[in-house]
Length: 430
Image (cartoon, rainbow, N blue to C red; front, side, top):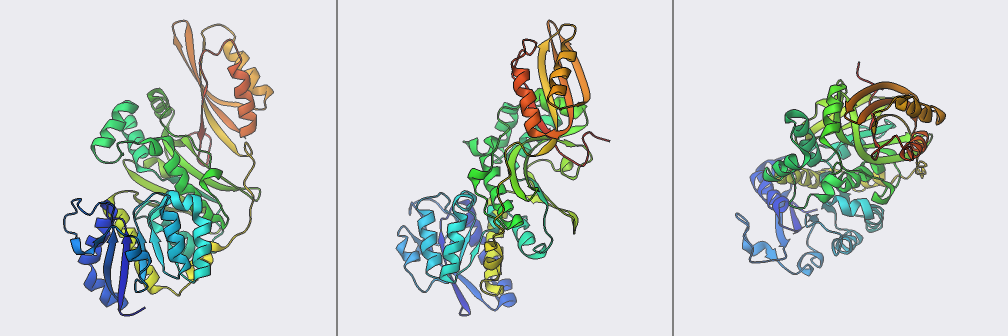
């Protein structure tokens, strides 16, 4: 590259404007540190007339050919989002040898292998730190610092919206709807929060992290996910009484040589490292027999934070040997996906049952016949019905699901059972 690095940017929303601002404010520092002067020469937008304070209108274009067809552009930054035509455009850029920096988690979770292959064939580079947990450098840590650490599991609070909602429900007793409304008022949640509260956003991020951590191909379709939109305040409150904290977790681990990745609400023991991560923060806990535990914590969203990660990736392209990061990201161990139900876990089970003698014994018998044992029982009477809350010992998930199917068919059980995984080093708080 020449001393002047010409940059084309696809998109100029909150993150794109943040990138322009950071590049402008740090231009002197970057030039002194890298020997390169970064110059954004074109910015693709949909609406040339939209207000973009501080952005030079002369940079703007509505024609993608002004960037994709310009052979003098050294790096393309993609912050426009979406799958189409973004996928096609990035394949074209990478295939022509132009390095790409993207923050597009949904695109990577669906088409990451195609993009990486195009980069390899074109002799270019693809960086995507900003696609997961914004400014937290978890991808760089996995691909560089811990490349040889043989990661066993990645457990993450990777969605700030849901973490904020659950934190407020626990802290103030707020209902889910009220906590979501407050998150929207503060800008932590979108007007349409479905991807966040439903778990799809976290699933995309976990697909990316699992791919990097385990050197294998994991796409979003390989990640079953459950969000918090059906969670009840009672479960958050009862979890607190039992010494747990409710979190929406992404969990990726190796199980007998296979990869398991999923997203779901979980009860976290109060002394677990992830229990204290509150508000809109994200955290990723990396575990390995070589390095034990490493946890990265910080803001996982926000325009400025994401823009900072984008700029960091640009600087990494300038300062790294061509192809080194790509070669590591493309390493493929070919591990299979773990069979559904193969994981072992402790579980929280809540049942609304008839308040009659012998009900607990009958339910315990059903669990026992499926090979599932009970660690703790909490019972509350509510008129003609009762609420049973149980913490189940670690058991294969398939056994628990079998027992759950039989419990649903019992006349004593009056509502859909609620089953939530319990994570941590033990089955119950110390």
